[in-house]
Image (cartoon, rainbow, N blue to C red; front, side):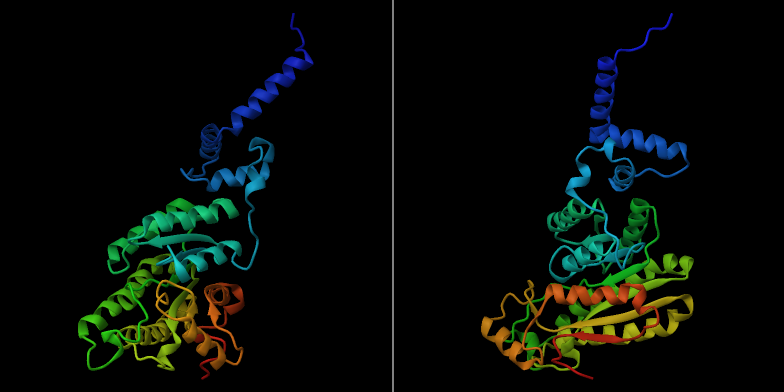
Length: 329
């Protein structure tokens, strides 16, 4: 004869099961088994675990209290952001994740910083970022990055932000600020970082763009191309080439559903590159703009959202200066 289980034993059993499922490793294992049984790939990261937590919060305890899944302008986007371990790239990654995108934080030499940016995003937005190594100057690195990103998220890349460049310091006293002392090696270094890097990244993402008949390319430029208040020959030459690259990409890839645009920044407050810029210079720039303020890294990143979102679907081949009106066409 079967005997009914006492309420206390049933309660204890349920409590034990809940605690069992709250263990991160076991929860991930059980989720993977469930997903595999449904014919869905299971990843080693927290992406699918977060999806389970959203639909079955009791299995995850207090997990949902520490992060949230955003719904914004970039929901459904998978964005690769090159050079995203710090500065402008890191802020673009944060803002894109806030708007609902899954983001790839690309790094080259700054592994710890790249992983820290991804961890920050994951803590705030439930596992929406991954840090992946890649030297943009090496095409094979970019191809491997895209493959790894798509395996990680289980979705195709559809947004590319070309932000990476060779290490640079804005120093008016540097040899590259005068035609008398700048060398071709200076120019070539910047060309390889910004232009070759962008080319390799586009070529690596293109198969995914073509498969979806959709893609967004955002190249990061500078207003020094239009208004060389300081003559940084190497940096400005590379960024000017990006303007041409952007227009060519727009012309060729438009029929494939791919948009290419450029966002040009001014003197941003503050980045590693502007670390040598004095407060007096920032003040001068601020007073020279119609808005009477310098542009922050956050201001710039917010503007990039437009070119990644549906709002810009009818826009391609354009350059947008985000500098408080310092430069006007």
